[in-house]
Every structure is written in structure tokens, then in C-alpha cells.
Image 1 (tube, one colour):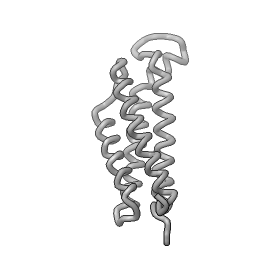
Image 2: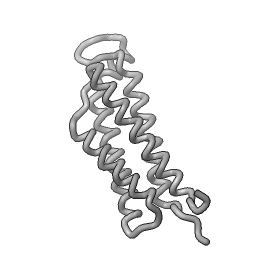
Image 3: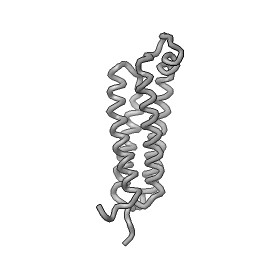
Image 4: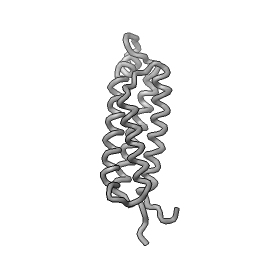
Length: 132
């Protein structure tokens, strides 16, 4: 662990946040929230890319971080778009086609998604291994 650089820890943080996001999405969809299958696929692919960042400085490391960031951003924006009615109805205090009780989970998913995007972006630019 002494040879691990700052990028390794950012990549680990991003991977953990992606796992937390997947668990929250399963809970969210179990409560009636709309989650597209492509969101799950994108997050699993992002998790694979983040896990590959944990292997250290490899030729694909730069691309894996970029791909993970794009996939996480896609998943976050899609969840926001699908949950927009939940948020709007929660703010306005009405009930039409959304589930206003899920607005808190929408906010949480957006927050975790943004932090995960930042973490994987920092991991892309930081060294994964300390130089000897």
C-alpha cells in the first residue's frame, strides 16, 4: 500500500461510490422509481473501468478513467431525467404522474453521481503509483 498514489485512492473511492449507486438504484426501482436498463449496464461498465484503474499505470488507464466518467455522467443524467417528475411534484406539493416521496432519493443519487464523476476525473489525472 505504500506505493499507491493519490490516483489509486480516487479510483477506489469512485468504485465504492458506483457500488453504492447501484445498490441505491435497486432500492429506488423497488419503490417504484423508473430506472432504465441502460443505466445499470453503464454503471457496471463504469465499475469495470474504475477497477482497471486500480491496477496501476497501464496503457489503457487514461482511457478507462475517461470512459468511466462518461458512463457515470450518462447514468446520473438519465436518472435525473427519469425522476424529474418526482422532484417537480415534491417541490410543488402536488401529485400527478410522479412519486414525490422518491425526490430525496433522486437528490441523493445526483449527489453521489457528481462526487463519483469528480473522483474518477481526479483519478484519471493523478498518478496511481508513487515513483521510486
